[in-house]
Image (cartoon, rainbow, N blue to C red):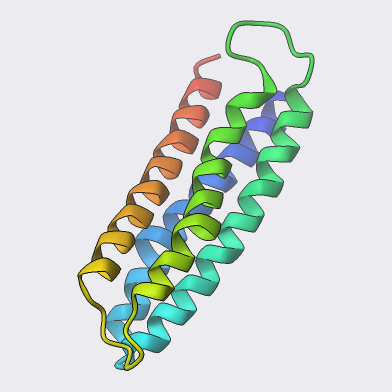
Length: 136
């Protein structure tokens, strides 16, 4: 059970890092159409959010009833909630802030920054969960 938990946490952390620190930046570097790069990155982040909710639910179910301090199932909810907030709370504001011609303004930059902070916080939270699990 413990090995499966660790593997799932490692997979989750790897997913977040691979998309946030590798795939999305590569899209913006390689594609000349920044709007297309943004659409593809947004689609990847949407999939990451949905997968994260599923992974958090699996992890919570796996540790339910497990004894010990910090062993409760709700610790897995924070990263998934941060990503859900970015996807369904911030992303609509981000899209609304984009001008009709596709030019990004100050509001877009602000909401993009908030979304990025939420994603980074979720990634750090998952890595912290993994490190905590490896120290048990």
